[in-house]
Length: 547
Image (tube, rainbow, N blue to C red; front, side, top):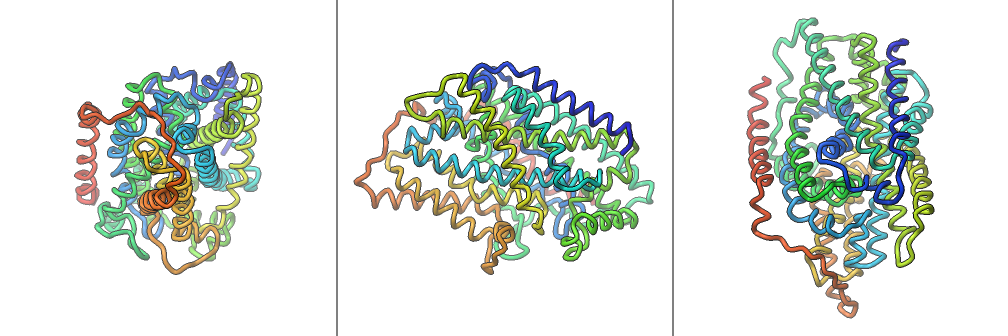
């Protein structure tokens, strides 16, 4: 990087600090955590996508597709269940949550079960989201360490302090509008990498036999059980459905955006936008990975540079695997792009990272204040509420940074880690909300037992979690199934324990919600169902189109 690149990055940082100052007028909880419930579907849609399609996607998804051993376009299977999950959230999850008027979605759980259930779910969210964001922060460190040759600790501080400051000042409005701008910058960076990578591929003579045929396969009929059996069609649709239904509907990070909407019509629009736009964006990521991965195969100096960076920054990975696949994109940026564009790409990467970190600390702060400080009959004064909220933003920013150090030695690509960590928790969380909406038989003892046992069993059989905590039980299932097993285990345990504790009655609450036949015939449902079929068709023929 030279003075031009640094000037672009510095200008970007100053802009976001100024944006936090611009949105600093937040008078109450609705302003600070829900943007006054005046946000439209367009910025909320971009914010929702930016939170999910983060630096993880920009760096690690192309690395998985183009370079990682056993990788390829099978990553697209993660998108199969998205339209179905969006339909489910529109019809089942959002109406009762939005109408309840809560800030923390876990407040709704207390109304149906108990304070203990609310706190368990809140703690589960805080642990899983802090760990997951630690992976994102780790990804930021990979990028900046490889590009700037600055020690890991300092690379963390460069980005986190800026993010915490503008999140602390501006609240939800700064986070949402910041995410929207960052999503646009991110996609611009993606397009630049795509076209420059293609031109360089042609300049090096192109691929004689086209892309590696093994990396072009998208649909696989394996069941996702046992070593090497991953990304099968059935587990990706079933497990993916429960993952996205829980993440977009019951995870505070995303649900807080839905609750910030003007009305339920706005929510349907933003869910429709995410259901339709995610697949083409991820497809673009994947094609970029194929192109740059192809460049690695025909440009030995490119591979050598990746290996050199791996040896310098990740000696353990170099000794075990030879290269760190996640370094493919940052090395490509520095090695092949001209100055000025390097700065733009760095801004794109920083945008992705900052959007994820800012969204997380804002949501973690919301549940901390609502679930632990503003709970019960006696509420905080507005001034004390705002003081604790801003202190919580700083606290969780520090915690997320600290969590990043847990993941440095993992052998998996970071994009796999982040999904594996979340999948341990998503199933039990989703079941808790569904039973809160529809069941009159489950008491809080059964629900608490269901959540706890399901999480523990998922932790035991998660390969990635076994790697993180350095244990080996000799058996594991592909982590996408954990979203499904979490649902089944939590459901069964909740009913069994509730039946055994009939002396403790289930709390009754009027959710003022019933699913009507007309809910299934709104136009968004038809559009998303048609798009689901289109995704499957495109994915089936994609190897032919690219081969």
